[in-house]
Length: 274
Image 1 (spheres, one colour):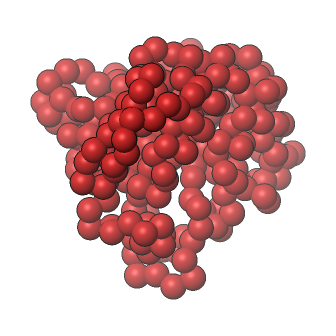
Image 2 (cartoon, helix red, strand yellow):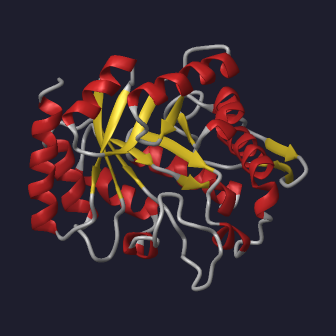
């Protein structure tokens, strides 16, 4: 089982350059970072985990800017979006951003994607939250076309463009791995696009049941990455027992010194299972 870190990079926490070096130095294989373009002042959408939306959601840096900085100071660390809100992103710009990051990092990008949950945030991007699932699927298909075809075109319900040239192309072929986040509603999307499922930190036996449902939907075994995992040895051992491929330990957003101390503790925990 592999170990990485998932976190929110903000203007109030550790800087990307220091964070990336520290994560790689502690032998984690990957770093996945969250994305929110903004948080509406007024909203009706409840926070999925209960209570108020934490402050870190309000202050996230652009993921591709942060990961580009991290790419420049690391050698082998996988650079993941956890998750990129494709529902809020132009597919042509996103295809270019991901491919550019993959090029400058030497093929180290993992494109983690999702449909989003904050309906008011989604609506502010001109997207109908009620149709976001179909929109995400079309944008992913269009992005793959742009990555893999010299002359790419796409004609769909939401995305439509005549043949275009779009470079650079990703280093990894046919394209960077796509990790799909979400619950059971995302299983058909994982079946079509997913090189892996980014799951929430469910109890291990519940996760096992979901993994079996996903296998039935996809018709194949799908590797599972569990994001924002608490530093609980029993929970981590449970994930090892049910066959999780990668655990992303949760790093709370704090200033540099506190973040480095927490990374030391998380590294010790991961070392117990390596």
